[in-house]
Amino acid sequence: MNTPIRTADYHTAGEPFRIVETIPFELTGESVAERRVHAMTDDGIDGLRQVLCLEPRGHADMYGGFITPPDDEHAAFGVLFWHKDGFSTACGHGTIALGVWALQNGLVAPDVSGTTDVTIDVPSGRVTARVHTENDRPTSVDFINVASYVLAEDVPLSTSRGEVTVDIGFGGAIYAQVDAASLGLTVTPENITELIAIGREIKWALNDSAHAQHPIDPRLSGVYGTIVYERLPAEEEGQVHQRNVTIFADGQVDRSPCGSGTATRVATLTAKGELPEGGVLVHDSIVGSRFTARVVDRLEVGGSPAVIPQVEGMAYRTGEHRFEADPRDPLVPGFVLR
Image (cartoon, rainbow, N blue to C red; front, side, top):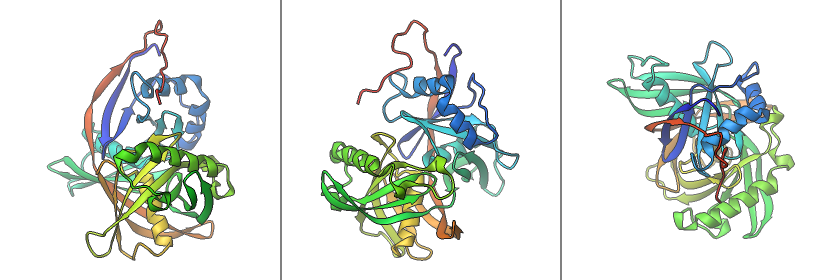
């Protein structure tokens, strides 16, 4: 990395998101999905991901995105999401951060109505971040996700913590979902080591299974993460209240309630009849932050029922960086101490 790289850093419900508007490499491909495939195999682009994500410039739970051109003129921009293990297909907390960033940096002019649509092309499709403002200042963001649906229900699985059943669903990425009670755990910070271990175990046990095959696009196949959820008493009628931790990639912990994971939970709870018509999922994270979500439309994907979820949260700017990598530095691109 010979050219200094500037980033704008945000957090959404506690989860970091590092935005890189310009990179010194050409991203080839006719679509964001194709550019992701190229980035995964390009040493320069992937090396930049590592420099910005790994220690000492990042950490094991860092997250970010490279801004790209959109697929066509109907979106404001595209993005390649990345984490310590590679490039992901979707990122809800990143979508929320990008909506705030787009308004704060003038990429999209605020609508006088107080709600501004920021349309973004991501590898799994097109999403819209709706940024709500007061006096042109963002106050909350909800995003309309891609079609989300169940791939498999009640899959039996033997784990180191006993026999469990797992639901598998898609909300922009594929997630395994397991009730914390069936594991003898609660979703609390003091259990994070055990939660990471079982999350990784379940992910890799199901990653190559038939249940984790995307029905349309094989590039989206494989279990991206494990959602360990805990049922909580509803605060109001018509709500489902849960707390979760999502263990994604290879042991990475989402501090937020996970945007695409929340969309997956909405689809799963709807399919199981647990989220009533017009109901709201109140989805808390392991650090106490919150997303709310609901179904805004229903459709079919490959002949099977699916929903369009809306997920709401908020992102805040945490600062800017100008990163450099000294060519004499023996620790470039970096390391992960976990």
